[in-house]
Length: 475
Image 1 (cartoon, rainbow, N blue to C red):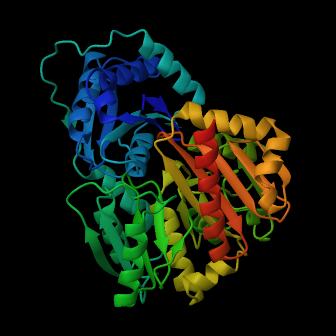
Image 2: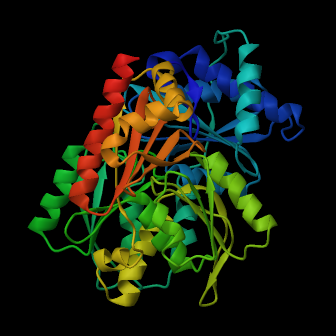
C-alpha cells in the first residue's frame, strides 16, 4: 500500500508514513498555504490525533514540519476530528489531524484543513506535487515544543450541541455507548448525559479496534446484539476511530446503516436538499421527505462541492451525508430559537443526537422511525488485499464491456442500468442493485448491494463479493 489521498485525507501503512513522509507532506501543506498568502510567519497551525499506537509519534513529525516552516504548531492532543476542525475554523487557522480513521492500527494518515475548512481535490493534487519536490528526509532540528491547548477544542465542540439541543431533551432514554478505541468515546458520554439520557459506557478498549461504520466486523455485530439482549436500551451508539462517522443501533442491537441515519438527521433538521454520494440508498429519491437529492462521487470533498452547488442554486437547508453516516451540515439550522452553525466536515455527534432526538420527540422506537423512510435493505462488504490496479481492471471491463456485464449478471436477469459516477453501480433487471468501487483508503474492493429483504441483501452481498473475487482472480 502506498501513501495516497482517498475519500478523506492521506492514508497508508504506518511504515510508509512514519518518518520523512509525515514531515514532507505536512511541509507541502503549509507551503501550499504560504504560497497562497494565507499563512504568515508565526501563524498557528492546530494539530490533533486519534488513539492509534503510531499517532503521537507522527504528530511530533507534523509539529516539527510546521515549526521548520516558521509557523507555530499548537498541540490539541487526542480529540475527535470534527472538534479539531470546528475549533480551527473558529480561530481562522489551518489544522492537521493525525488519524487513519477506521483502518487497522498498522495504518495511519493525515487530514488537512485550510482556515476555511477541509481541503478539496485540487488542494490534494497541489500537495502531492509540492511534496514530490521536497527532499525525502527529516532535517536535523532542535526538539520542538508545541504550544498546548488543553481541552478547549473539545469543550467548544460539546457546547455546539448542548447549546442547540434543548436541555433534558433526551431524558427518559437509555443509551449504550460502545466506546472501544474511539477518540470520541468520553465526549459522547458527557454530551448524552448533559442532555438527560441515562448513558451506559460499553466495551472500552486499551488497544486500537478498527471499527468501520460502513462494513461492521462480525465481532461488532455480535457485541451490539448481545448488549441489547442483556439490557434495555433505546439505542446503542458509537463512532469510528476519529469520531467523524457514527454507529447507531436500535433497541434490538440492529445496526442502522449510515445513509439511513443521515436521512433521519436531514429530516429532523428540516432539510429541503440532501447531498450524498451515489453509494447511498436509492430510496432517498422515493421516500418523499426531501425536495431534492443531489448525488456525488464518494468522498467528503465531493459532498462539500455538491453542497456548494445546492446552496448556489437556492436550496434553503442543505444536509450532506455519506453512506458511512458522516454528516456535513451545509446550512445553519434554527430550531426553537436556537441556532446550529454550518460545519463542512464529517461529524458523528450530530447524526447520533438527531437519531436519539427523533426517538425522544416522537415516542417511537428507532426501528419504526427508520422503516418510515422505506429504504431498500442495504448491505456492504469488502474484499481485502486487492491491489488498486486489479480493482481498476475489473471495474473497467465491467463498465465498458456490456456483453460481459450482462453475462455475469444473468443470474439477476441481466443489466438494466450502469452508473459509472463512482466505481460501477449496476441496477439489475430484477430491480436489485450491486455497486463495486475501489476503496480510496486501503487496498480493497468494496461492494454495496440493495434488495427488498434482509436475507436477500445478505445473499446478494455474498454473491457480489464472490463474483468480485472470481473475476479479479481470473483477470
